[in-house]
Image 1 (spheres, rainbow, N blue to C red):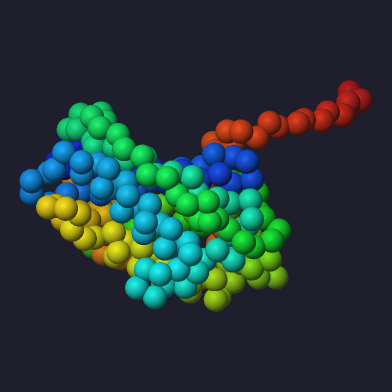
Image 2 (spheres, rainbow, N blue to C red):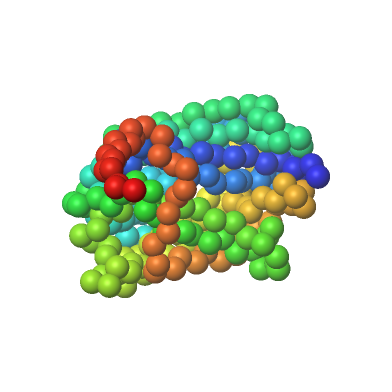
Length: 221
């Protein structure tokens, strides 16, 4: 099944406790001129709105920097134009300012994350998306029973909704909006709701830079 038309994938690159992490946002352009620099404009919009998602400022959203550990920082956004066969035909980069980072103490392990579920109003798993958020500070986000603290939960959910709302806008001559992409169905569906639960998840197979040190003990047979 081919990919939907006019799709752009934006990878938000982060470093969490020395490990490289990627958060992916899909965007679709409405029918328009599809200007030649649209990939660059997509990269810059996602960078700017993610910076405001972390630091505050998307329609009055609160700063989340204190919920993230000092070991969490964001480096670049890489955007790609995705062709019908799934290949990238264009690439653009937009660098974050060095101030886009966490400020909380006692960082959690890099693979510990929260899941932002992206709903489109259409039934079926192929119409739902997800975004993993990692790099949190346990001192500002954990309850005594290991759940996401109530105030942090509210601020994260509100800010995630404002982030996806802020992404939808005109850039140059084209209207772009965040979508959930299904290569199986060949669809791109508008996001209508975001949800975040208060139970922690893990980002599997994300340990890239960290070298594991193992110890062994003999067992008498």
